[in-house]
Image (cartoon, rainbow, N blue to C red; front, side, top):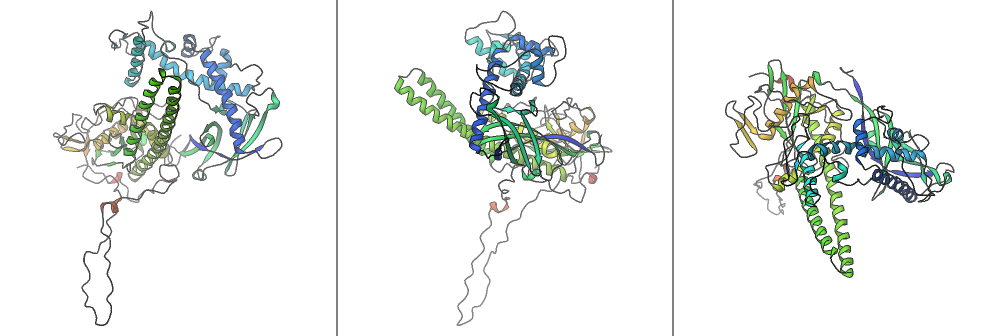
Length: 601
């Protein structure tokens, strides 16, 4: 139910760490280092059992069953992975003499079924593409069936796998290839998704501003009985920025180990303002730009048609994009150097091989550190962009934010280096952060088709000219133009407003508009975009005062003010802990409505 003041539940994720641990039976405190060790034993058991189960199920019959979605009695497989595995008889096997509770086996089978169900789509695509692949030329024939659509990026990855298989001398297959013929079984991650278990293994309670997790952990790496599984009560603080949120339920976390120890990945359900796509009148279009993370523009649904002032907003990444490009280049160089040393170590004498392996280990450690830096910057960049874009939409009183469909978005035509950098950008993470941040204020985020958004005129739908280079666009017929990213934002917002009543919704995904409709967007002479804050230069005293010094008095020394520079106009970076996080709150809505000021020319 949607309407004025309506609310709707939604789930979000958050991470936290335990600060105290006690034995649930005796109440004696336990060191956090000991807890990390015992959790490591649990994760080792889960990863080993999951890897063995995946290897045992790695054959075409497994994917045939998952594609059909039926068990041996032709009943539909349930959504829960551990229940589906129990019906199919897929149970993990542990070493002799090791006792593992059945609830831990539920965790193992739940994670394995989730991985295999994800790979079932890839198996179907490989089967369809291998029938069209020519191993002699490495070319894929065009599809003959209308329903055999596969994303282009996925097609390129599968084609590379098929070419590599042909180069190894395996030749053309007798029939269609399956995923088991192209690649080996995946490696299972060392994590414990406690959501597949029940209260006998883990339970979560909320006491004030704390989360209390009671979970059974082994007391040895190879527990031999029930006595070697003891319950531990872990206490973790709820992050401060969640204290004022309307959270109605906390779910069992996923336990992982990183360089700092035990990490909880918790999921929670909260109440947020409900959004109604059908009643949206103002939309913000967000276009992903090759030189910055994104740009935005506004389109409004006027009684006489769609209008826009064709002025947009461009995100300032504060130099983080340059830093990401440098770290990416550094990581690629480290990878290339480690690969070269690996080839040399394969034919080197034993004493030289030991030295090369030591150097390879150092390079791998440096590469992991570079990857950790990139992940941290990407997260900060994504949430900072989400906050800025949400504030822009709130100031414009928009009810809808349109983003490009990333499954159809393909970076090409900018050179190998720029294409790689654009493909490695945190667009998916920025979309998730934008959907989370905008949901707090009741603004819906929908995905729209990306093709032609920056190449076609929003008014007449004709190709745009590039009089000033790649970043400019101009339509001589409609006499509109400007930055091509801003025009793309107008097109995206237009497609969202025209298709808001035809959006499709899937579980766990944002609403999507599949068809791009066209309607002319007239240029509005009134200002309909929020004015960005622009700090002024500091006042500078240009000359010394002309004063006549008195006789017998030592004159004062006049020190002129420092000269203003371009850096005085740059906003200082927000304090640590506020940039790119969910702590920051959206700016208040201005008193003057923006959408109501639009008038047709």
